[in-house]
Image (cartoon, rainbow, N blue to C red; front, side, top):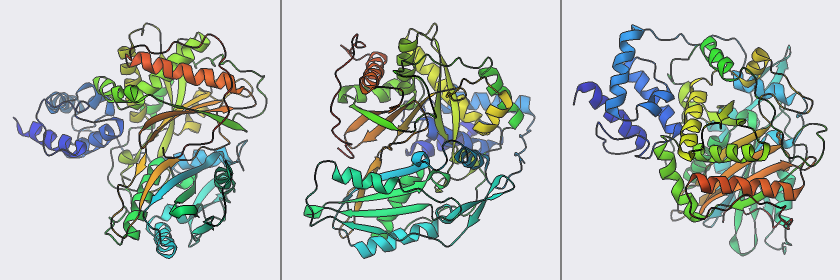
Length: 522
């Protein structure tokens, strides 16, 4: 093998956490996904000095193929690298957009809270856990940051404000059905004061028979889903007096930032003409903001189907998100008769900005516009969803509010710009078994009773598989309608995965089921 290919093999192996790979190792078949592809693109770009996109990894998934593409890029780029963006602003654009959104119709609601409920393992010492919790704001400045307004824009201010661990002792009280869930909701829904802080809280619930749960509640301005995994791992390590890697104190080199003009040109081409709002099967007229009051339909995905997803995703050079998004798009197409479905989704930009390992808000909201026409082949649709996701990552420099302001799409009253439906995949948090004298944490997101969208398809990984949590606006949908929509999405997922005997969409409304409460970690 040539030296460039050897270097790429080394970088592939590091991204895949393997000892070695060959020049013909397919990145996705070896376990890669969209986030690890982004990390690989950044590391390759740093090593070779040529811009590398996630799309390049998607299309050239082996070291040998990628080496050939990089050789072509060197010949045409003449070694030029795009200049980093110098867009002014007191906070990152993604944070500024989220802060501005908070000043509008969603301000003051719990829709921007990031709650995580973790089942504890091991005998917990409340003083040791409180001490471990106290280290988190010290290690991560985002958790002691507040946001004050300066001439209509936010300014981040570091403080020394931190909330102590709140201990709720329920060991002597019999718990009625739903009472624990109600207690969690009550704490999750306490609003944060963005200008005063603190914007991070931790609550320990001590239950009968030695059971305990830890609730982490953080404002979205200083936290995202991946941050929660970092916090859980660090809590376990600090509690067990283990060595914890120092978080990045400043942005790393990251990747040469694509010009805003180039990214805007991509979005302008993709979103012009603007997507027509989907004729969603609402039960009532749209009044007021979306998601003011929501409920959730929870459906477990059969284990056999979950087992098929990694191979299906790998064949499309994607992670698990691509077939899930494709299934949601097909379900919405079936419901509305549309072949043009635009979804909203978050993409993680840590590797792009050199903030791997950092706690904070490092995601961008992007429109995922999928063309269902001529894609009767499920595999083709998954590849299409994978390509759109890769392109969204590659062009995520533009904050969503700037995208809306620049393209200025037409909007009907009560509708969002570009999309009304959200889709996301939330990984399971699992710190492994508890070490002697230590603790372990297992769990994931706690579902809110408020949201920002009419429909939010939240695929949540858990200890034994995957479930769909469809959060729906109760002002616009009856529960049986939401159940039909969720069932249709899972039926489409079965058909995409080639599951024998995949259920067909229900022809009549399903009977309303009594809500059995959230299943946190089962």
